[in-house]
Length: 174
Image 1: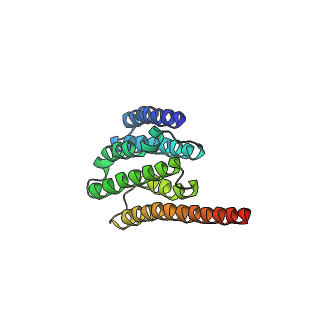
Image 2 (image 1 turned 45 degrees about the vertical axis):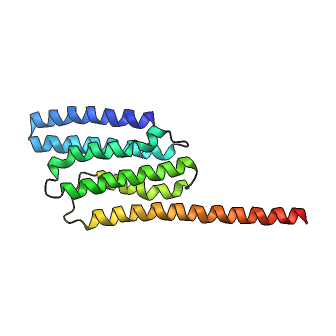
Image 3 (image 1 turned 90 degrees about the vertical axis):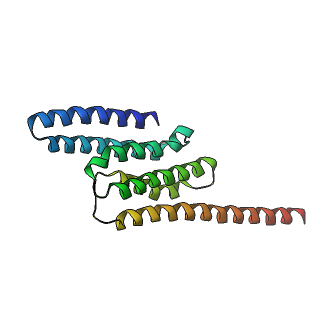
């Protein structure tokens, strides 16, 4: 997890430097684009490293929520028209990802079911605004369905394992 945080902080610093240099040599908008691109790339790499963590700490579990809040505040000036709905779905995707990570940490979900909420979280963090609320609602709804299906499938598998263990115990007694 510390590697992800170091990469994220480094991408902020490098993005600010590169954005400032670009702004000095070109336009303000070009400097902001360079800043957003470098920070976004660092963010994607940092979150990609999270896939290789075997055991999540509590900081790891709850980190998507403050990251999504800070990201939405940073991106709000760029998405003034659609900023409110995009912010709500981005923060919601961070919350759902935290719930999935919490369930995985508790042993109630397999790592497979974290992939889609992670992709949706990354999608919501992209500095791209597609007009209309359909893409945000579709992605957020899919992430929520993945959370529900992951917990239901795990419960069904757990119950089947319990039933097979009980039947093998009966066979041993007879």
